[in-house]
Image (cartoon, rainbow, N blue to C red; front, side, top):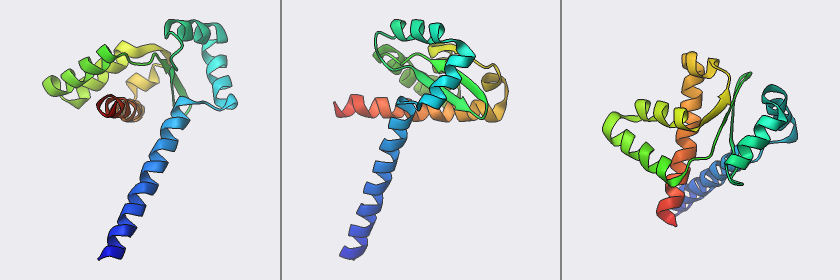
Length: 137
């Protein structure tokens, strides 16, 4: 029994490490991926958005060939998102928060159901991570 518990704990520790790496990957783009965004939206657009974000990292979303740039959420955005989940459910809260944070992007991400689901899941994972940081901190 002790061996099984230790093994399960090791598996969860490994899973947590993998999830942390995923978060870091979303936050820091490889030069090749950043170049894709700069070609699509222009370096000037990205630089201007970065200035408006007050030095906080922008959110870059890539689903297949479709791209979007979103501003980082504020504490108020996170509160609105949590309230929207409670009042309207996850799907409507997802639409609300993506709309609030959207800077620029391919409309396919909003129109294509499969691509929208990918955007929704990425944003939800990011926001759940932020919520976890808030409650831990």
